[in-house]
Length: 257
Ligand SMILES: NC(=O)c1ccc[n+]([C@@H]2O[C@H](COP(=O)([O-])OP(=O)(O)OC[C@H]3O[C@@H](n4cnc5c(N)ncnc54)[C@H](O)[C@@H]3O)[C@@H](O)[C@H]2O)c1
Image (cartoon, rainbow, N blue to C red; front, side, top):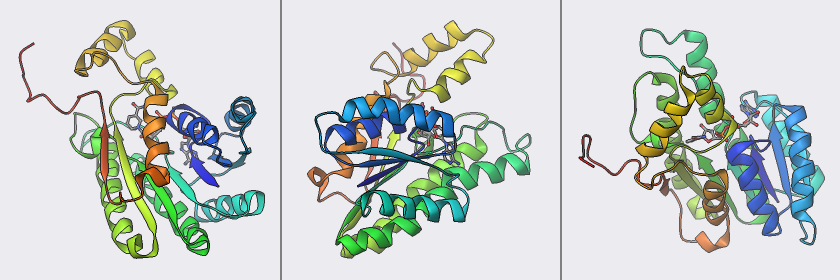
Protein backbone atom coordinates (compact mmCIF):
# COMPACT_ATOMS: atom_id res chain seq x y z
CA UNK A 1 0.00 0.00 0.00
CA UNK A 2 1.65 3.15 -1.23
CA UNK A 3 0.86 6.85 -1.16
CA UNK A 4 2.36 9.07 -3.85
CA UNK A 5 1.90 12.80 -3.33
CA UNK A 6 1.78 14.89 -6.48
CA UNK A 7 1.03 11.58 -8.19
CA UNK A 8 -1.14 13.05 -10.93
CA UNK A 9 1.73 14.23 -13.12
CA UNK A 10 5.42 14.09 -13.87
CA UNK A 11 7.76 12.27 -11.49
CA UNK A 12 4.96 11.28 -9.11
CA UNK A 13 2.91 9.68 -11.89
CA UNK A 14 5.99 7.82 -13.15
CA UNK A 15 6.83 6.58 -9.64
CA UNK A 16 3.23 5.46 -9.18
CA UNK A 17 3.40 3.51 -12.47
CA UNK A 18 6.56 1.71 -11.29
CA UNK A 19 4.96 0.86 -7.95
CA UNK A 20 1.79 -0.40 -9.62
CA UNK A 21 3.85 -2.59 -11.97
CA UNK A 22 5.53 -4.08 -8.90
CA UNK A 23 2.11 -5.01 -7.51
CA UNK A 24 1.54 -2.19 -5.01
CA UNK A 25 -1.84 -0.65 -4.37
CA UNK A 26 -1.32 3.06 -4.92
CA UNK A 27 -3.18 6.13 -3.67
CA UNK A 28 -2.41 9.30 -5.60
CA UNK A 29 -2.63 12.42 -3.44
CA UNK A 30 -2.91 15.55 -5.51
CA UNK A 31 -4.56 18.96 -5.30
CA UNK A 32 -5.65 18.77 -8.94
CA UNK A 33 -8.84 16.67 -9.06
CA UNK A 34 -8.96 16.57 -12.85
CA UNK A 35 -5.32 15.55 -13.30
CA UNK A 36 -5.63 12.94 -10.54
CA UNK A 37 -8.65 11.24 -12.07
CA UNK A 38 -6.96 11.20 -15.51
CA UNK A 39 -3.88 9.66 -13.86
CA UNK A 40 -5.95 6.97 -12.15
CA UNK A 41 -7.39 6.00 -15.55
CA UNK A 42 -3.94 5.81 -17.12
CA UNK A 43 -2.57 3.75 -14.22
CA UNK A 44 -5.52 1.38 -14.25
CA UNK A 45 -4.33 0.12 -17.64
CA UNK A 46 -0.81 -0.34 -16.16
CA UNK A 47 -2.28 -2.33 -13.27
CA UNK A 48 -4.10 -4.84 -15.48
CA UNK A 49 -2.65 -8.26 -14.78
CA UNK A 50 -0.98 -7.22 -11.50
CA UNK A 51 -2.58 -7.31 -8.10
CA UNK A 52 -2.46 -3.61 -7.20
CA UNK A 53 -5.33 -1.16 -7.40
CA UNK A 54 -5.14 2.59 -7.93
CA UNK A 55 -7.21 5.41 -6.50
CA UNK A 56 -6.84 9.10 -5.75
CA UNK A 57 -7.67 11.59 -3.05
CA UNK A 58 -7.78 15.32 -3.64
CA UNK A 59 -5.73 17.08 -0.98
CA UNK A 60 -3.33 19.95 -0.47
CA UNK A 61 -0.43 18.38 1.44
CA UNK A 62 0.50 21.70 3.01
CA UNK A 63 -2.75 21.68 5.01
CA UNK A 64 -2.73 19.54 8.15
CA UNK A 65 -6.38 18.45 7.84
CA UNK A 66 -5.83 17.44 4.20
CA UNK A 67 -2.70 15.43 5.03
CA UNK A 68 -4.49 13.60 7.85
CA UNK A 69 -7.47 12.94 5.57
CA UNK A 70 -5.25 11.66 2.73
CA UNK A 71 -3.63 9.06 4.99
CA UNK A 72 -6.98 8.07 6.54
CA UNK A 73 -8.52 7.68 3.07
CA UNK A 74 -5.64 5.39 2.06
CA UNK A 75 -6.08 3.22 5.15
CA UNK A 76 -9.81 3.03 4.49
CA UNK A 77 -9.34 2.16 0.81
CA UNK A 78 -6.37 -0.24 1.00
CA UNK A 79 -6.10 -1.23 4.67
CA UNK A 80 -2.82 0.46 5.62
CA UNK A 81 0.28 2.29 4.45
CA UNK A 82 3.68 0.67 3.70
CA UNK A 83 5.20 3.27 1.39
CA UNK A 84 5.03 7.06 1.25
CA UNK A 85 6.52 8.94 -1.68
CA UNK A 86 6.74 12.62 -0.71
CA UNK A 87 6.96 14.06 -4.19
CA UNK A 88 4.50 16.97 -4.57
CA UNK A 89 6.30 20.23 -5.06
CA UNK A 90 6.16 23.65 -6.65
CA UNK A 91 8.89 25.54 -8.48
CA UNK A 92 9.25 29.18 -7.48
CA UNK A 93 11.67 31.89 -8.49
CA UNK A 94 13.24 34.90 -6.83
CA UNK A 95 16.49 36.16 -5.33
CA UNK A 96 16.76 37.32 -1.70
CA UNK A 97 15.33 40.72 -2.63
CA UNK A 98 12.60 39.82 -5.11
CA UNK A 99 11.23 36.82 -3.19
CA UNK A 100 8.01 37.90 -1.49
CA UNK A 101 6.87 36.63 1.89
CA UNK A 102 3.94 34.96 0.12
CA UNK A 103 6.24 33.03 -2.26
CA UNK A 104 8.56 32.09 0.61
CA UNK A 105 5.71 30.77 2.78
CA UNK A 106 3.99 28.92 -0.08
CA UNK A 107 7.24 27.26 -1.15
CA UNK A 108 8.09 26.14 2.38
CA UNK A 109 4.55 25.01 3.08
CA UNK A 110 4.30 22.77 0.02
CA UNK A 111 7.92 21.68 -0.51
CA UNK A 112 8.79 21.12 3.15
CA UNK A 113 5.95 21.29 5.66
CA UNK A 114 3.69 19.13 3.49
CA UNK A 115 6.23 16.28 3.50
CA UNK A 116 6.53 16.40 7.26
CA UNK A 117 2.72 16.48 7.61
CA UNK A 118 2.26 13.46 5.34
CA UNK A 119 5.00 11.61 7.25
CA UNK A 120 3.47 12.58 10.60
CA UNK A 121 0.27 10.73 9.71
CA UNK A 122 1.70 7.93 7.54
CA UNK A 123 4.43 6.76 9.96
CA UNK A 124 2.01 5.60 12.70
CA UNK A 125 0.23 3.50 10.05
CA UNK A 126 3.60 1.98 9.02
CA UNK A 127 4.41 1.21 12.66
CA UNK A 128 1.13 -0.68 12.97
CA UNK A 129 2.35 -2.91 10.11
CA UNK A 130 5.84 -3.33 11.60
CA UNK A 131 7.81 -1.43 8.98
CA UNK A 132 7.65 1.16 6.23
CA UNK A 133 9.55 3.14 3.66
CA UNK A 134 9.47 6.85 2.85
CA UNK A 135 11.07 8.34 -0.25
CA UNK A 136 11.41 12.10 -0.38
CA UNK A 137 11.89 13.83 -3.72
CA UNK A 138 14.32 16.71 -3.20
CA UNK A 139 16.49 18.00 -6.06
CA UNK A 140 20.06 18.70 -7.08
CA UNK A 141 19.03 22.13 -5.79
CA UNK A 142 19.08 20.54 -2.33
CA UNK A 143 22.83 20.03 -2.70
CA UNK A 144 23.86 23.03 -4.80
CA UNK A 145 22.12 26.12 -6.03
CA UNK A 146 21.70 28.47 -8.96
CA UNK A 147 20.54 32.02 -9.41
CA UNK A 148 17.03 33.20 -8.58
CA UNK A 149 15.72 30.19 -6.64
CA UNK A 150 16.24 31.23 -3.01
CA UNK A 151 13.03 29.78 -1.57
CA UNK A 152 12.99 26.66 -3.80
CA UNK A 153 16.62 25.73 -3.19
CA UNK A 154 16.30 26.37 0.55
CA UNK A 155 13.22 24.11 0.71
CA UNK A 156 15.10 21.33 -1.09
CA UNK A 157 18.17 21.62 1.17
CA UNK A 158 15.79 21.40 4.13
CA UNK A 159 14.17 18.30 2.66
CA UNK A 160 17.51 16.52 2.93
CA UNK A 161 17.59 17.58 6.59
CA UNK A 162 14.06 16.26 7.04
CA UNK A 163 15.12 12.96 5.44
CA UNK A 164 18.10 12.54 7.74
CA UNK A 165 16.32 13.53 10.94
CA UNK A 166 13.30 11.32 10.27
CA UNK A 167 15.64 8.45 9.31
CA UNK A 168 17.49 8.74 12.64
CA UNK A 169 14.24 8.85 14.61
CA UNK A 170 12.58 5.93 12.85
CA UNK A 171 15.43 3.51 11.98
CA UNK A 172 15.11 1.35 15.08
CA UNK A 173 11.39 1.05 14.40
CA UNK A 174 12.01 -0.26 10.87
CA UNK A 175 10.78 2.78 8.96
CA UNK A 176 13.41 3.74 6.38
CA UNK A 177 13.58 7.28 5.03
CA UNK A 178 15.58 8.10 1.90
CA UNK A 179 15.76 10.91 -0.57
CA UNK A 180 16.31 11.30 -4.32
CA UNK A 181 17.86 14.39 -5.87
CA UNK A 182 16.93 14.54 -9.56
CA UNK A 183 18.57 16.72 -12.14
CA UNK A 184 16.26 18.25 -14.76
CA UNK A 185 13.34 16.00 -15.68
CA UNK A 186 10.96 16.28 -18.63
CA UNK A 187 7.77 16.93 -16.63
CA UNK A 188 4.95 19.49 -16.87
CA UNK A 189 6.87 21.59 -14.28
CA UNK A 190 9.94 21.87 -16.52
CA UNK A 191 7.91 22.07 -19.73
CA UNK A 192 6.11 25.16 -18.43
CA UNK A 193 9.41 26.81 -17.43
CA UNK A 194 10.82 26.07 -20.92
CA UNK A 195 7.69 27.32 -22.68
CA UNK A 196 7.66 30.57 -20.72
CA UNK A 197 11.24 31.38 -21.80
CA UNK A 198 11.84 33.93 -24.56
CA UNK A 199 13.52 31.19 -26.62
CA UNK A 200 12.22 27.75 -25.57
CA UNK A 201 14.26 25.81 -28.18
CA UNK A 202 17.49 27.43 -27.04
CA UNK A 203 16.70 26.77 -23.36
CA UNK A 204 15.94 23.12 -24.10
CA UNK A 205 19.35 22.74 -25.78
CA UNK A 206 21.06 24.45 -22.82
CA UNK A 207 19.30 22.14 -20.35
CA UNK A 208 20.31 19.06 -22.35
CA UNK A 209 23.95 20.22 -22.57
CA UNK A 210 24.14 21.04 -18.84
CA UNK A 211 23.83 17.32 -18.13
CA UNK A 212 27.06 15.47 -19.04
CA UNK A 213 24.93 12.53 -20.18
CA UNK A 214 23.69 14.88 -22.95
CA UNK A 215 19.99 15.15 -22.14
CA UNK A 216 17.49 15.73 -19.38
CA UNK A 217 15.78 12.77 -17.70
CA UNK A 218 12.47 11.17 -18.50
CA UNK A 219 10.19 10.86 -15.42
CA UNK A 220 10.39 7.05 -15.50
CA UNK A 221 14.16 7.25 -14.89
CA UNK A 222 13.46 8.90 -11.54
CA UNK A 223 10.40 6.72 -10.86
CA UNK A 224 12.51 3.56 -11.09
CA UNK A 225 14.94 4.82 -8.44
CA UNK A 226 12.06 5.87 -6.18
CA UNK A 227 10.45 2.42 -6.54
CA UNK A 228 13.80 0.76 -5.71
CA UNK A 229 14.30 2.86 -2.57
CA UNK A 230 10.70 2.20 -1.53
CA UNK A 231 11.14 -1.57 -1.87
CA UNK A 232 12.77 -4.19 0.32
CA UNK A 233 15.57 -4.33 -2.28
CA UNK A 234 16.88 -1.23 -0.48
CA UNK A 235 16.39 -2.79 2.97
CA UNK A 236 19.74 -1.57 4.41
CA UNK A 237 19.38 1.98 3.09
CA UNK A 238 18.13 4.75 5.31
CA UNK A 239 18.99 8.44 5.45
CA UNK A 240 20.58 8.13 2.01
CA UNK A 241 20.63 10.98 -0.46
CA UNK A 242 20.61 9.46 -3.94
CA UNK A 243 21.61 11.77 -6.78
CA UNK A 244 19.91 10.95 -10.11
CA UNK A 245 21.18 13.73 -12.32
CA UNK A 246 22.89 12.46 -15.48
CA UNK A 247 26.14 13.82 -14.06
CA UNK A 248 24.83 17.39 -13.68
CA UNK A 249 26.65 18.01 -10.38
CA UNK A 250 29.92 16.40 -11.48
CA UNK A 251 31.95 18.93 -13.48
CA UNK A 252 34.04 21.55 -11.74
CA UNK A 253 32.57 24.89 -12.89
CA UNK A 254 34.11 25.95 -16.18
CA UNK A 255 35.29 22.44 -17.12
CA UNK A 256 36.34 22.65 -20.78
CA UNK A 257 34.51 20.48 -23.32
N1 LIG B 1 11.09 18.25 -12.99
C1 LIG B 1 12.31 18.45 -12.54
O1 LIG B 1 13.24 18.78 -13.29
C2 LIG B 1 12.61 18.24 -11.08
C3 LIG B 1 13.96 18.18 -10.71
C4 LIG B 1 14.27 17.99 -9.36
C5 LIG B 1 13.26 17.83 -8.44
N2 LIG B 1 11.96 17.91 -8.84
C6 LIG B 1 10.95 17.74 -7.81
O2 LIG B 1 10.17 16.61 -8.13
C7 LIG B 1 8.85 16.77 -7.63
C8 LIG B 1 7.85 16.54 -8.76
O3 LIG B 1 8.15 17.48 -9.78
P1 LIG B 1 7.50 17.40 -11.24
O4 LIG B 1 8.47 18.02 -12.15
O5 LIG B 1 6.96 16.04 -11.50
O6 LIG B 1 6.30 18.43 -10.99
P2 LIG B 1 4.91 18.65 -11.79
O7 LIG B 1 4.53 20.07 -11.57
O8 LIG B 1 5.06 18.15 -13.17
O9 LIG B 1 3.93 17.71 -10.96
C9 LIG B 1 3.73 17.99 -9.60
C10 LIG B 1 2.42 17.41 -9.13
O10 LIG B 1 2.28 17.78 -7.74
C11 LIG B 1 0.97 18.30 -7.52
N3 LIG B 1 1.05 19.22 -6.38
C12 LIG B 1 1.78 20.34 -6.27
N4 LIG B 1 1.59 20.91 -5.08
C13 LIG B 1 0.72 20.12 -4.39
C14 LIG B 1 0.13 20.18 -3.10
N5 LIG B 1 0.36 21.20 -2.27
N6 LIG B 1 -0.69 19.18 -2.71
C15 LIG B 1 -0.96 18.16 -3.55
N7 LIG B 1 -0.46 18.06 -4.80
C16 LIG B 1 0.38 19.04 -5.21
C17 LIG B 1 0.59 18.96 -8.84
O11 LIG B 1 -0.79 19.11 -9.00
C18 LIG B 1 1.21 17.98 -9.85
O12 LIG B 1 0.31 16.94 -10.17
C19 LIG B 1 8.79 18.19 -7.04
O13 LIG B 1 8.98 18.11 -5.64
C20 LIG B 1 9.96 18.88 -7.71
O14 LIG B 1 10.46 19.94 -6.93
C21 LIG B 1 11.61 18.09 -10.14
